[in-house]
Amino acid sequence: MSQSTIQSDVRQYYGQTLSSSADLKTGACCDPSSMSPRLRALLADVHPEILARFYGCGSPIPEALEGATVLDLGCGTGRDVYLLSRLVGPNGRVIGVDMTPEQLAVAREHAQWHADRYGHAHSNVEFREGLIEDLGAAGIADASVDLVVSNCVLNLCADKGRAFSEAWRVLKPGGELYFSDVYADRRIPAELRADPVLLGECLGGALYWEDFRRLMLQVGCADPRILARSPVPLLDAAIEARIGMVNFESITVRAFKLALEDRCEDYGQVATYLGGIDGAEHAFVLDDHHRFERGRPMLVCGNTADMVSQSRYGRWFRVDGDKAQHFGLFDCAPTTAADGGGGACC
Image (tube, rainbow, N blue to C red):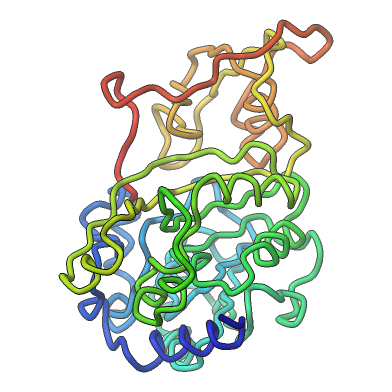
């Protein structure tokens, strides 16, 4: 299946086949009631037409965004762009890139409405038509973005390797890729990857998790972290009959543009969250196995120490120790569900 055919099928599905999230045939789309209270409260100030045409599978919006430059890959009608617009504030900037003109038309129509709603003197959002596999053509320069987000879009890409490579290119050193997407527990057969309905429903193009891990290594990311995951139910009998042998999950991932190691190594370092991040008053969650309570020191691997000290979160953390002495591998495995790990996609 050619890249141009995939792009055409996706444009058709999201530009014409779907008129609202109610038209979707699976349970990948995120229920707003599952969002964090912090983000759910902000939905009241997003235009109803944009909310009705939201097709994401998570809430890939992290903390500490005041003044940041954010890029939303596959922004659609702009729900996350406008949530981010509120969070970055008038000194921040949000750029949405999408290849579907019909969705971008809806997004642009409400830019001033949101600026007025948020009390911004000028709109701090911009929407650009283009492919997320070619951000250069959309005018996104090297190392120009603090945060790249994406919500259930990367599975739709015709060239996923190039899309991740482009996201990595535009991130500043220490910048963050934070996204939700649908993953499969095996490689999808070619004939199912070519099915336009399965593709449009975010199933046909879902990456096998191990292939995603290998792809991230190729672009320079050695240690992507999972924040949350939940199963994607197949709600349509015809879809279940075609692809029901595959298990799908919505997974939210974060990755930092840092020189990290491909294993968690022990250098005897200790990280302490000092508090002060809005929405994380009592604890900061880095991933599904690192919850930093305010003021409580935590022994961490070298990669985790770098993530909390060399990213935009650094001013809210103290890291004691360096990498002068190595103690071998660090047990950085996630806890099991019985130990309290896991979580919802939102």
